[in-house]
Structure formats: structure tokens, C-alpha cells
Image 1 (cartoon, helix red, strand yellow):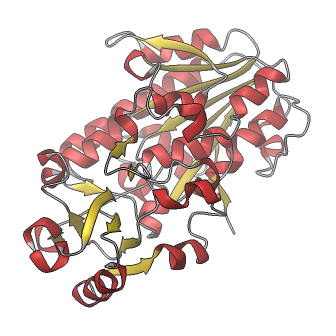
Image 2 (cartoon, rainbow, N blue to C red):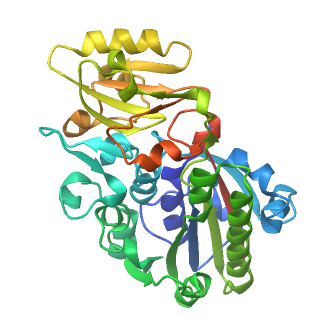
Length: 371
């Protein structure tokens, strides 16, 4: 079994001598003894997408060729989506434990849907996501932990849930990002960085588009800059939060355009590849039967209890259960379930998607370099 995104920060902490941290990924064998670790997450850099990038990304091409660094396949957590993965990375535990269980989730006891990437102060991050982060553990062990993030992210509920305990280093738009990361590596400890360019291009223009290849070239240039400027005794670890796939028009189902699919549903959450359907009282069995029939061969349709028992979320805390839909619809193949009356209109215009359980979505790389 491959390792998981949950193993990255504990293994990095072990490299830095944190008591109780376990190097389950065997990083020390690859990078040796180091005083600094840079962890850079490239949003949307799925493991199975790497071969498509070789023409425009010379560093990634050299990694695939086996001439630079070392490449390992890991898995993200489910749903394979950014908020869930970032908090799994930060805490080292699966979503059932940390509670950030999807791109959007119903706030239990209300009809409100929380969109994690636009989360402010409510619900309070420390209550919604109660698990200590590895940034806190590093800090408590006396090891510096810094997060170099676009300034718009600092202070958000998602940032607090994933990275609390880190010293935040906000970067203004247009400011040289790689230089800020390198500057923070001047002193020992862990430095975390993030870039969303590749994922944005995949969503807006599609995997394999000119926009996507151009974004890959920029990401590769960023990584090359970091590698060239790494101080001695430093490891650079590059990973991702998920992969993705393109969804053609004929593979899209709009639940809001179908009265039969819409019947009995109180709240719609999740995202197009993984739908959480919260049903009207007494309607769960009918909704399950209808969706199972309508999406036969295109999605796995389960009750909450079935999905939890299958273990896809990891162990689920009792207090987090109601955040999962009464019905969980996990698309297979290249199907996506839109909800045009429940989501921003831009969602239906996207080309690339993720969230599901396919290898294209779940497999992520870990690239290890050292100086």
C-alpha cells in the first residue's frame, strides 16, 4: 500500500528531530541528515498527470527519467479535494477525524452550506477542526515552522484549520514567491509553501489545454528556482493535494434540471464528483433508490452509514457524522453531478474536476530532493 498525504509532515518532523514523530515514508534514507525541510504543495499535481507534463516542465521530466530527486506515489484522502487534503496534510489524520469532510458541507442543525475555501470565523475553526496540527507540534517541540502563503489566505478558517501553529509569512500578489520561500529557509526548521496555478488552469481550461501546460511551466520554474537556491543541509519535498480529470458535456448530470432527482432533497453539498445529499425526513430510502437507478454504472450511491462503514473517510468522530450527507454519491468514470441552483454558475462552466476515488484523482506524488 502506498503512503498517504497524512504521512508527509510526521516524516518531515522526524527528520527535524521531533520526539514522537515517525518517518514512515523513509525520508532519511533519501535525503540524509538535514536541518531544514521545505514542503511545497502544488495544487492539482496528480501522480498520473506527471507524464503529460514532461515537454513543458524540465525538472519534472528529469525526475520521471530518474536523473533528479526521487519520486514516490502517495494517496490523498477522500474526498480528493483541496480543503480536505490540506487539513489531512496539516494534521496527519484522515477527514473523519479532523472534520473537514468535503469542498462544501452542511452545517448540522441548519440548512447552511459551508464552503471551506470561503470560510471566515464561523463556525470557529478550533471547534470545527479540533485536531492539533503538525505545525503546532513542531512549535511545541521548539522547531520553527513557517508557512509562506498568499496574503489572501492568512486568517481564513481553512488556513487556521490546516496550518495553525505556523508562523505565517504572507506574500503579496506580484511579490516573488520563490524568493520568500528561500529567505525563510535561511534558518533551520520547516517551511511550507503552496501554489494553485496548475489546479486553476485544470478547472478553467482543462487538463491538457495550453493554459494548463503554461501553468505547469511556471510551476516547474518555481521548483527549479527553489532547488537551485536551497541552502546546505536542506530537503525539498514536493507533493499535491489531488489529481483530476476532464468531464465532457455528455457526462454531466444536473440534479436541479431533473425533478425526479431533486425530489426529497433538503440540502445539497459536496461537489460535482462527490455529492452529499441531505434528505427530507423519511425520504432517504426513496432518494437512495431513485439515485441508484438513475446513475447506475455512473456513480456509487450509498447511505452515510454505508460510506462510513466502507472506510473511505477513515474513522469518523461521532460529532462529524452529520456533516456527511444522508446519501453519498461518488461518481465513477468521467461523470459529474452538477447542482446549478445550489452552486455558483461558474461551477458548470469548469472543464477539469476532482473529488472522487479514481486513481487519476487520488494518486499524488512525493518528490524528494536534498542539498
